[in-house]
Length: 289
Image (cartoon, rainbow, N blue to C red; front, side, top):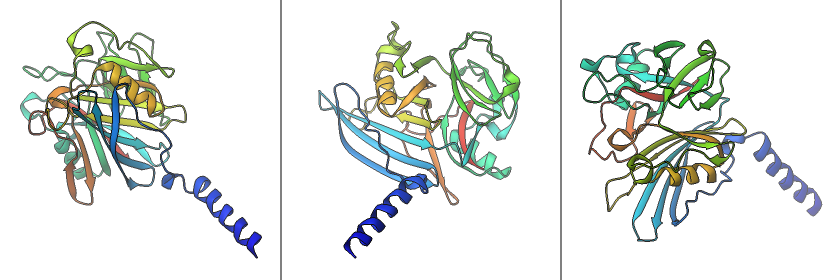
């Protein structure tokens, strides 16, 4: 009888790991050199999508808060969010990440989470800085060869340097960034000189693991008692510790936003440094199939 019970418990454990991957406990331990992880909470938003909140303290006893979406590719697709869910640059009708979500949901898309996307001309045209593709439609070509992330028509998330030749017809969505943080599991162009790289700012990052799991991370900053941002090297270390093999830095600062939709309610889970959600050109939306 004892042997039977032991075997039954073992079988249940195997089933929980193999048949129910959406319920599997995250095995990666977030870490950044010089930071100590003091708090962590995990919440499963739906099958295959987990929201994690992290609090680190650095060596000067200053806090750094990060918000992570871990997304399995089986149950979701990625879309680009834009003002009024449109396919053009509309500076006179610019909107926040939350408003992008609301517009997409109104058009029948089951968006459950989103983060802000590319850098953009905030004081003039709101034109994105890099390659921008929405539902296979090119909104802006990558004339300046900036790095970008993309979701292919085959449902795979990839990070590109911006200099390689890519058939744009194979991309359903593309969003620009400033730096490739990780390439093949190792830090890439994160030690470049300049304040954007070396100063601690609010950040928005995305990456992908070897098993095609996607990661979207927002790090709050410019709020001394709440959170103090990160350098690009620290962003790369966090992504690396979370299992990413490739990762990219998107627009940060006051643009950094992460919004969740639970039922009919929309929640901004990070604390934007502007004190409110900034109106941005585009966002990356996680949409249930």
